[in-house]
Length: 594
Figure 1 (cartoon, one colour):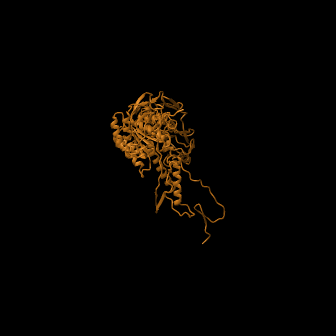
Figure 2 (cartoon, rainbow, N blue to C red; figure 1 turned 90 degrees about the vertical axis):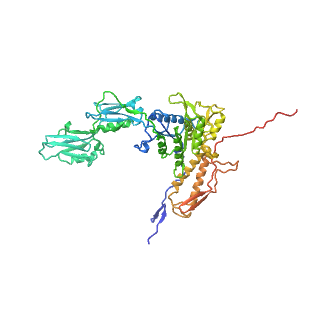
């Protein structure tokens, strides 16, 4: 046997020398943006239907980072109103910015605006469609000036003008003795048809299937006697994107003529779609550029706000299970939808779900207070909150409007998504005008006991606040009753799971004295202690030296059974809001003698 190598970083070395590498110490990852994301399901005047199975999953919802961004797309509707209320849910600095990100799912089957625009081929046209379904597209207009090859497109807020949209791809010429050499281009080939030749030259066919790019086509043409071609575009330009040329146009390539082959429609299509104002949904059979338009053509076909199907909200809830977001809300009056939502959220927070979330819903404008309380009791779980009280706020037009309880749930979740999950929305100043109901104390008390969100006025500042941010959980358990405690608990479960998956799953266990890479019990225990300490630093776990309470139990146990590891006595003290302070100030009168 020869010389045995020395192992370093998984490789064996036999040649002498010094070898090294650096390794960055493992760090606790930052908070995921999902913790600061609010997903909302509702109806919008414009926007794709989230239940349209013809779209890819990524195209069935919108991601917005502000209300202004959402308004440009959605235009109006209850979904946009919810984003407006959530974008600045509180007047307090720590919560005023609202969630970092909104995920919006529109449940209306809106119809996109479109128009058929004539092409240079008589009797044929191309169809332009506004990419956002709904009436917003009806404001889009289009015009083409053939003389300058320029296109104008835009809406009531402005018109964009293109440069000259001309794309020369190649030139071709024939030098034989044929009496005619006529060019034609179809969707599958470039063809030169000869007549009257006596020099042995033959008609030319360049199949795009065999020569798909411009450089391949030019090289092939130049290999055929009596034909010459030259490149005028990118070498990889696809020949299938050429404008069509019909033989009836009698375009000669017989020398001294040199014919230029264009892809102007391709250039027009790319520029139009780059503006965001329209996409090509169909093209004419003969691929020719747009014809001349002396006046603007508006996209007037379609462009209407659709209706919400009977199962639209349920279907959207089911689809949204694929999308991670710590907070999600539905804008629905149906108790059936709310129960389905409860089940979907449970699936997400289950060990198999792996997408921790808190769901929010609430009462509508028609149900009585007692009926709304009953709905809250019906839900009765810690991963849901329920907005009960109606309130008045400014609408999209700046007018006062009464909003239903499910919008109060939107605000409650928006405050949570605006900052760390440890913060409770309880008693945070809201950006609303007033309660629409002014419930009496006994009704507010009963509603809170039923797990519903109600309003009260801060006696010092006069601001309207959520009296107590509770879940609908029926058990008397402070951790399960307080939404921020639940949010923190779910966040810790998520961070531990993601850490275990990324660091340990799939790796082999090794002895502490092994000189190879692997996982030891000490590694895992050290990692868990590090994560628990990070939870303390983030304010998720809390201890008190004054009370003699540790934030977490440090002597937890790791049990190993082959490929399965269990943690025992993994215990911590989760944060909870300060809801009550009771005190007795003992007083006496002045007594004594002088």
